[in-house]
Amino acid sequence: MIRIEKQRMFEKLQDETGISNEEYYLAYKRVKRIKGFYTHLIVYILVNLFLIFNKYFEANTIEVFSQWHTYSTPFFWGIGLVAHGLSVFGSELFFGSNWEERKIKEYMEKEKPNKFE
Image 1 (cartoon, rainbow, N blue to C red):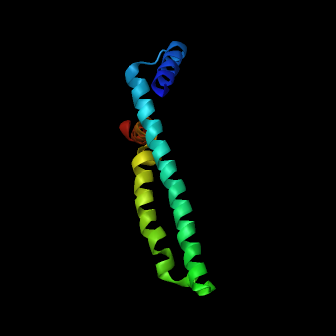
Image 2: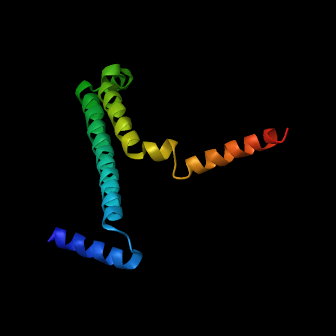
Image 3: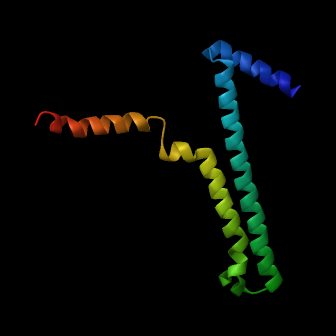
């Protein structure tokens, strides 16, 4: 049932925009990767809030918020989350869609005054 709905959505999109199967597949994969990252982020937030507040209620003191072991799991998991985010958004973060074009123009502008001297 879901597969049929996706196929209809693709056919409608293809009629409206004229995109190819390959373009659709690449966009679909990209959306799935972004969705995976946001799911990871939500789970990270919920689980770590639970762990931190659970440690507080077990210790029944506010001092637990100043101890390393309270934040060790969020810290190391956060490193993994950042790596996941960079794998999904990293290429756009550092090298956006028109980065190459801007750099080429920048170097051409730099070299223009030196060319006639």
